[in-house]
Length: 403
Image 1 (cartoon, rainbow, N blue to C red):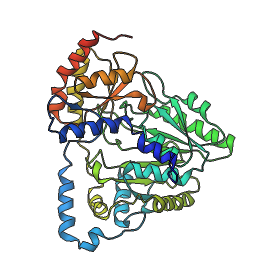
Image 2: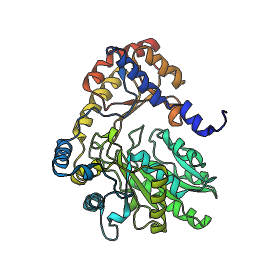
Image 3: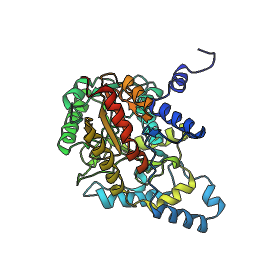
Image 4: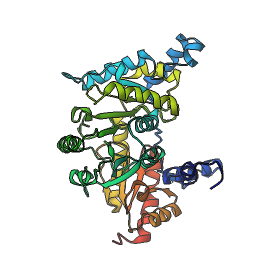
């Protein structure tokens, strides 16, 4: 290793995620003028336009605020008015009894990535461990390891992809500080069932007593509102007191490039004030502060609905198309991904074979498991329908499932 260069950071930089590698390949094709026979399903980068309320809010903010107000520094935890607006929206949807939220429970961040990084930095110590449930968003591993903690992978229940409570319990050690969950899940689209979350909460409470330490449940919720078929995504703080919620407007409002999110520290959290101050410290240390202009926009858009019907329509196009060909596809309850069982056991070999047909599919080993690929269907309709002949040719190459 070169002198003065952190080996872990070098590893993160040199070893890009499969999602980013495929996405960057796609961008290279575009820059080279290759725009046909390439179907990019690599990254959750919505082409669905942001709701009109977002543009209206931007125009209003630009017209009514001074340059200083638009571009000046804000409080490290975000503008009070914006945090109050978000708290009102959360209380309208999830508040009841003692479960009420205020501006002092919220910290505005540079997207969910900033929220998760700041939370792990604030609430863990080097050498502790955080549990992730496979398949999981691969950046969790980097966020955990960056703060010199151990990433412990625990498989979910086969076929249903629900948390396996017994397996999680078996993985908890005296050094366990956190369990990370994601519902609706990226990459499977699974929504965690209320009874499973109840079992998880009961087990974690008992483990807290047994070990004499707080075990945080970090609920990563960028797809919270994107649910289908009458499903309801549970509000995790209702189940477990030591929950921290990390959220992003990247998916719900089609604003991935704006990096707009927040951390919610519910009043029920053990040592709430101390944890919140630690989050403020991590926010300063790693500079995950949300930009000033977007904070003012979110103040006006906190309750704007996600374009669920549009994603549901896109899901129908690609799910039916692949199922009709013969692919074994997990039907997602939410988010905007398809989890597809590979035609051969080796997911890397299958992804490379798909690439030969212009199909950019992310292999499942990046998500901590084998023999699947992830397809992101937040793209345009031409990509969805236009890719089906290529999927048919890929199927024909194999002749069917080989395992």
